[in-house]
Length: 476
Image (tube, rainbow, N blue to C red):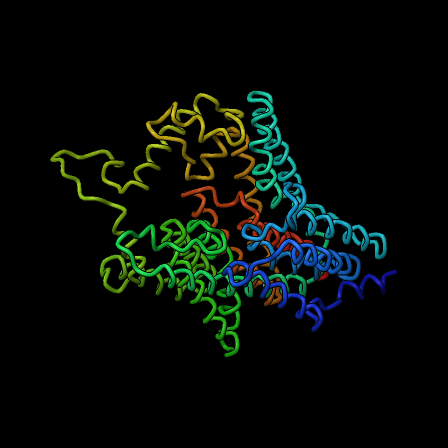
């Protein structure tokens, strides 16, 4: 039994056969995203059958390969949900992947006696968080009735699915090779999405209205696209910084710069600030000299705007408008429309939180009630922490912050205690993305869609498993 377990743990996931499957999948997703092909109903059925057979085979032969294929699919899940012509939220590619991975995990447990869910404080807090989210949804259903349930069940499931993914993929990550493979596939996907984003930006061309120049990429929303590059592009940086003396790792600078270029093409101010914050943090914990150089570079850009990339300069210059009053005006009157509306919303949200402090107004209700607390229309809170507090209550927000703290401490522990360079590089990259995650969510709800945040929770699971393996003596 022990020999069989070791064999499956040491199995290499990146085989020529799997590379071929992954390449075909990524090419197909890319062609769909760039509208180079259209798919007929007959073709959809054929794809559904072929995909199902492939997924089932991988689920029982090597479910970790299925996980890697799932990572390649996740960012494309918005433009290609994989309903295969069946108009119901329950039947889609994401659910098929999750069900197959779950079957594969239990299959491996039965064959090799692998522990499915290693003990982790994060698991307990996530379980509490899920219960509180569900309670918020139930509260809304009881108050507003069947219409509310039908209106929000789909978005509620999408909100919850990435978090549940953490539990499903945790047993599929068995060793450092799996962690490396997750990072490799993620970086491949980032590169492809970056190329798609830049292509869209070129096609949009120049306009006097910046909003018409903003690339939404496969997410069809510029701020979400910008957040995607912030969350995962630091993986390139992690591998580069841990292999400065190895020339081949410097080749990763090309896709890193491509991702940065794609980020600027989204014109997302929050994402740009988040990328700066993540870069400074990565440099600070890895190389103080690079940190100091970055500080000087950012200060130079601040005081000499001419050296700043034009897209970045344009986006931040339009944030403020010149006040015409002689007295000091309110902050929201000195900001352009998008920024000023957020100040109004946040003030109204605070009043809403004071009215419903413990358990909030209910999942998804904020946009429908904010007009009672602020002079705005039906709008989102543009801040993930505020939306959680307003809709689910301060208790849920506190639990969420505890979860973020555990993720940070766990990943930092892996970075400091693990000796393996590959795992340390992934941990460093994830830490940069994590800091970016914190900043991005100050400017919007940037973790509630599976196409954006699914990989975040998979990387979280990888770091939890890395700590478990280190403690068990299975990782240097």
